[in-house]
Image (cartoon, rainbow, N blue to C red; front, top):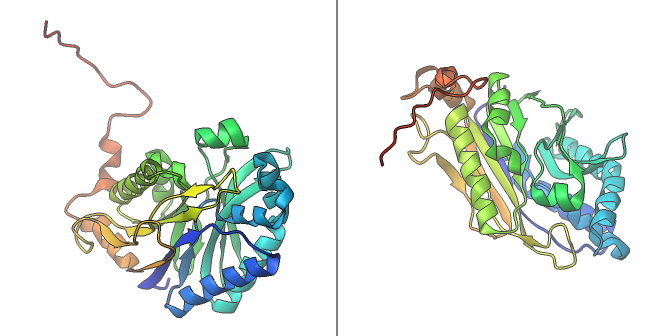
Length: 299
């Protein structure tokens, strides 16, 4: 395991692209900049791949057509990420994208590429109202922990970060870092995911990394408005900042946000922190029964 090391979380701008080559150039610039900045793990946001719709004007105003178009490009997108991970010697969580399962339905899939050529995938579990009611995206059915040279990494895509049992399952499997790629069209949404990410860092006594889309793309029904700031959080305890905020970007400004992380700090705080959230989790009311309740009338 390599520790300490540097993480780069993207505040990634959704932009109209003139060609596939323009997309490849953009991604290469972003990866190259983060690698030059010393990052070993690069985190891109949820649905960042939807900017590829701009390559096919006929689908730009069509949500279902956009989803299908990007899903069809996914093999080429993944080949590019694999090549960049190897070339720059970095781990890359690619921007999530629609993926069409053999049953014909679409899922929201993030992919983690290692410099050695390995690839892991994580589908989003819980769909937002927009995804399920308008996009027809369905949830995944497999939660994966990636045991990498950098440590054990889990992925909670956007809305999934607001549900503690998903992150808890990853922590129980050994996760030390939770990656939270996000895509939110309002400050309400951004803060929900930010608060969820910070809560998961507190509960799991681990690092969480939020990476959002930013900017405006009026031509896209999927990612037309994008608000947020990238950040790296930890538990507010020994060896971490008092507020748990290790690094945070400027709201809505494109660019990388960098943070140094040391997984030894995760092990230390889980073993001998001021509080032991991970160890004490089981002392909550059992989840398979309702708590005993006493109703007292105050009339």
